[in-house]
Image (cartoon, rainbow over all chains, first blue to last red; front, top):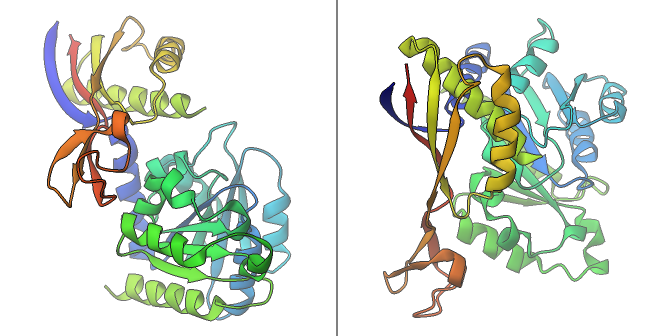
Length: 219
Length: 114
């Protein structure tokens, strides 16, 4: 037996797959956005609103869930392309699974493809899916202490969407404190307090997405 | 289950290493696991013993885990302290401007193979 020093991360094979998918989507001009949040934060509702508002963009959604097709059906009803991925009990999406889901969208070209990751603030943060941008959603009903409890998710994300702000009057959610804690963990994070229901704050988030898509296609 | 996902990636990474280095049998795998990596080591080893049988090159392997202590750096007083004992707040100056230096990683340090 010989001894071989590796000093590789356990997920080295995943990181290679992720870089390959990023290069492929870059060449196609498709920005892949990894959307992460807890279960019930309003991911599908938010994406539905974005699909309606950004009708000029070709948008696809990859819905990852442990079971059921209900989310993909909601997206398809809006006329956007959708695929449902079942993770067979796995708590996150990795790059290989994401590439397979992306392939399942077919030959059509998209400007923006959302990966709706499994609903959980822990494991999805640890895996590079090959996305160009990472966006996390925290809903008002979850509480403003979440940056302290799940720091990695806040550190890893490019954007934080604070959803359901129409419900702020009913919860003890300290919005400035939440933003302060998130920025402390990740000074560069873009923060968007929104309500997909009333439309408040959506324009800023959608402009950010448009800028990211343009940047992805040109740089 | 989080450990299952990590074990599947570890097995895949080792399979690829074996193919690159033309190895037929991996005997020992030394893994360094950070104290705050979130990995439950007992569960991880159980999971490994279940999945290694699915890979010819890994089926007789032994997994050895080494713990990397978690250390936090304080941006205010420039000191370091044990993360697990004191958490986010610096025990010396009570600042919250602190950053994890190490302890969240999971690294394949070395393997013994033929």
